[in-house]
Image 1 (tube, one colour):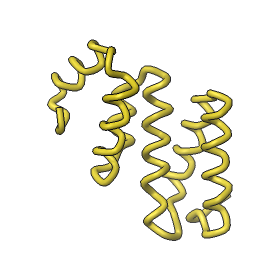
Image 2: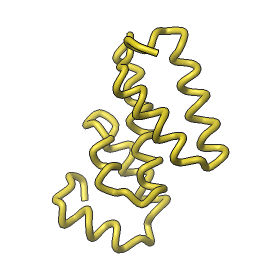
Image 3: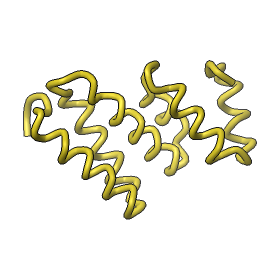
Length: 105
């Protein structure tokens, strides 16, 4: 499909993301988010959930650099708070993020 994601398609994108998470299909989740980011949204407020899920997919695939590039400033704090609880024992991750001078660490 071409053009921005319309109001009616937002629901399909959300359900696609939720189903991919339920199936733990991180590659599919990343694909859905990448397509949504390329196409854009009719309404800008739906952008944050795509960045959040794209970062989650990248994190699950151990691609921290992509995860950080997916996150926009508006939802960075939410993702970081979630990661701090979900990945609190991953010392290598936090050391890498600190060396990259990520804000909030």
